[in-house]
Amino acid sequence: MKTFQKIAIPLSLGVLGLIIINSCSVGIPKGAAAVQNFNSEKYLGKWYEIARFDYRFEKNMDNVTATYSKNTNGTIRVDNKGYDYVKKEWKESIGEAKFVNDPSEARLKVSFFKPIWAGYNVIDIDDNYQYALVAGSSLKYLWILSRTTEIPDSIRQRFLEKAKKIGYKTDDLIWVKHNQ
Image (cartoon, rainbow, N blue to C red; front, side, top):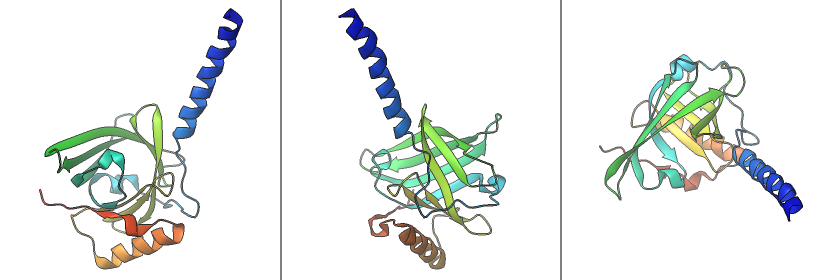
């Protein structure tokens, strides 16, 4: 029995570790490319979520914002806020983002529950850093962000066309209300 425990416990821990590592995907969807010559300083500040897929962690949320600021250690603080219109309460989640490669490439990993990290890839952004298209690690995660609560139709169409070419089902996007 002791021999079985000596083998089973480490083996179980190893399998659990592999599961956790595999769930921490910081990749980028096939066909997507992160913005090059990215200026992280210009990206900092407040963004309004314009559209997203229906994620469990943002269920029933409107008035969603993300504010990015620099931490003293060089990482980026991620402060997400939103209003749960079912529970009638504001929710906030604080996380941390780090660049996957060089800071001039808009590929980051973000964590709200360490040690679990997820991909955060800016795949399109306008020249003035007013509108951004952000992909997660897979085709399950996509966000359209804006510095204001609205987005011009030309940018909206540009982002939707790019997302469709990559393989996103853009008809499933939720268009976030900003009324508070």
